[in-house]
Length: 254
Image 1 (cartoon, rainbow, N blue to C red):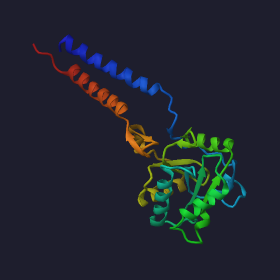
Image 2: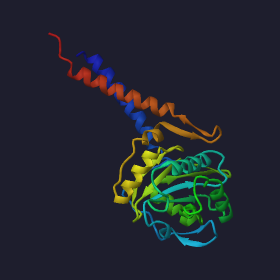
Image 3: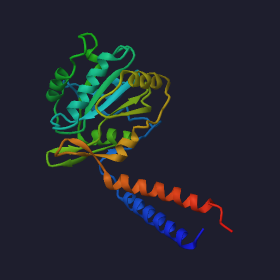
Image 4: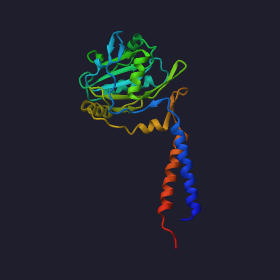
């Protein structure tokens, strides 16, 4: 192998590695950072949609789906609640028997009255009997920040709105985090498997984390957009490594 070839590959490798490290060194302000196997603080106090002071642990006695929204969201929150409402109506499990759902607002300014309104709007697939097992909670900034930090849910306030990720989080009856399901649309099979795993306390990482790496939310366009710079840096690094290994093991000509 010619020295010039090796030098070129090393330059590409070092440049792409340095570029990726520069990107990685920037602290993420918004996103979801999985805390699998951690236990959420069950002693936190919130107000439910009936304006009753309740403890979070009072709602977690079986596998529980946690969703985090704010009630005046112009973007992802309503599609998330729509998707959760839809999959609850399709999954081959019974709400209140096999699992519960808890939606928590991360805007300390949201009120129980707004929580009650959201519950009415996003419980079309629920019957009167099981509607009580999907609860909406609001709280002060201290309790909200504690629950967000415990699950790795990072938000950033911009004006009156928030930048935030979109996902639901499964916890076991003991409050152990077992699964993250990303996006605003959820397959019944995925939810059923996640609930079954949570009932046994089995945690599973999700391959959908790559979506959070490759895409960022555009609050103005109210949609996800591809992070071209980050993806390009990863691709360059990947192919530089392949080329380097190929040239390294390529037999020398006599």
